[in-house]
Image 1 (cartoon, rainbow, N blue to C red):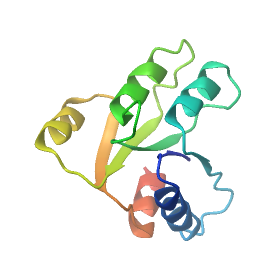
Image 2 (cartoon, rainbow, N blue to C red):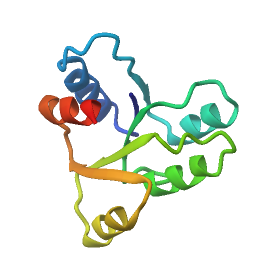
Image 3 (cartoon, helix red, strand yellow):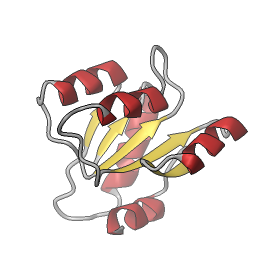
Image 4 (cartoon, one colour):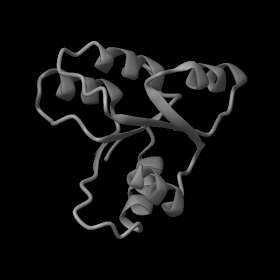
Length: 122
């Protein structure tokens, strides 16, 4: 599970909730710089995750733009389950998520341990 969020406190809470699932062999990798995440994916420095949790509103580049950029990678894993989370619930953002074939779901921050268990089971 990879987590991309510019807010270190949000990363901490998200990681903690993932750890609390107590799922064995769960690998968690967090990025507080979305452009760094894109660079790591582009340069094949990291494997593509099975699950990506990404914030919508970040400076410089938002979550939708990050997804658009990684989808252009020649080795993009189309089976990756992408879930977005945010403190906002703008109708236009929610509509965009519903229309997306790539984004599986949206959660209001913070995704709970029980929600993570469901996400990981899928």
